[in-house]
Image (cartoon, rainbow, N blue to C red; front, side, top):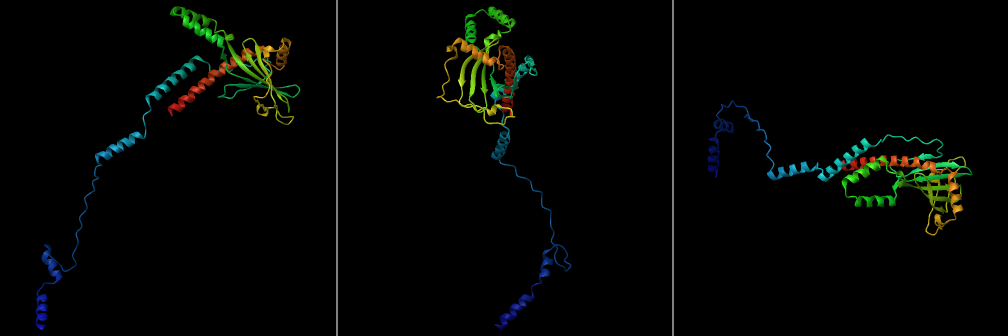
Length: 295
């Protein structure tokens, strides 16, 4: 055993030291200091291209973020714009009608509504509110006009008739306006007249006696439409047909309305006012449709 130990130590002494081994394995001359590590710059990373399927997905996703407008929408917007241009060229949208002298009502006209309200205070604490609707073509006139168009086959005759209608400026007597006249008193029921206004007269269609009237308000306050609480139930007796009443009673009801300002001389102004409002509301409706569809 002693010999073996001596031989192992002798064998170790024959190996060169570690520094000498480094010198032998290097082509540089070793100076005896620690070895120097040489670092080389890393090459720039080149982004790998996206797979073809991913590139297609990205293209589809970017294009779908702004979808194309359907052709039907574009055609509709185009036609609306043409109609808007026609209305602006043919109609005077800025026209302001002059209120006739002595017109006893205050006009309440809210844009977007198809009616206007006429309001006034009358003696005895009465509040009168009149709801005025858009002009309507009388059914008898409309039916007759359609029959004439079906019978007319000659284009020249149709043109002559159209020019003749233009010269007559379309007889305004063929149009009518629905009126609802409400006469109310404080803490009392409301008397309601359903009327039809023609160009030269106002006819009463029915007279109803409502079960509710004006709500309690201060004496010095003006009565507004919101203060009138009118209820209508199927059980309420609405009276007979106005045409079935005695003629003298009919005349008395007409006189009752006349002294409160519902006269024949206001019908022409109401017709012009409501016809002008209908054009403005139509123009406003077209603009709203265009903005919604084009958004």
